[in-house]
Length: 223
Image 1 (cartoon, one colour):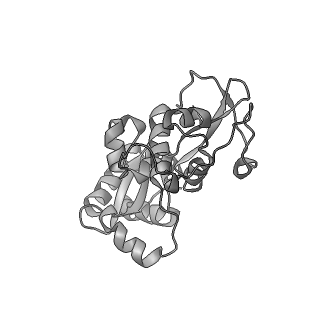
Image 2 (cartoon, helix red, strand yellow):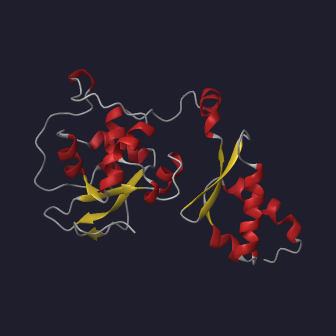
Image 3 (tube, helix red, strand yellow):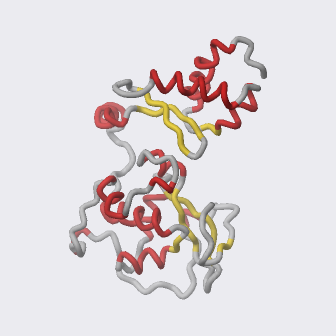
């Protein structure tokens, strides 16, 4: 579809992003609107000049995608009004698990447990999958073909990163996601049950419908 009046391109792009509600590949927009990369970038620059700072809506980019998002400065107000029963707050254990996955991906659940020194990371991993900050990226080429986990695009958006190359150091990420290292967890606050791990890892119930899971060798990395 050709955009007849390029003067309206900025408003057309804004409308698309507003209705989409999620990130859209820049290349997809240029292809469908039959415009050049330069024309799109010009429109996005004009939008970014408007939707930044104190504005309630911000224009964000990540992994060559573009999206409208609420101003993070107003997150508490948004949550108070719209999300009284919103998603569960990530526990410290889940956040530490997320930090490990971010830096060690692709990584198995057993490897996460070894790093954290716990016997079961099922609960933390399930919470992170439910909140769409991690996903199954394949299976490790090892005994039992254990699942491999990596971060999602939503992880990048949630922590205001354009790509994984922008990850701060480990301590910096823990600070960003408000994790306080207090040493060994108290038993009363533990999320984990003590039990022996099976020799081979079975697909958890919450992932039994997962399709397209590939086997990845231990040395492979996420593209």
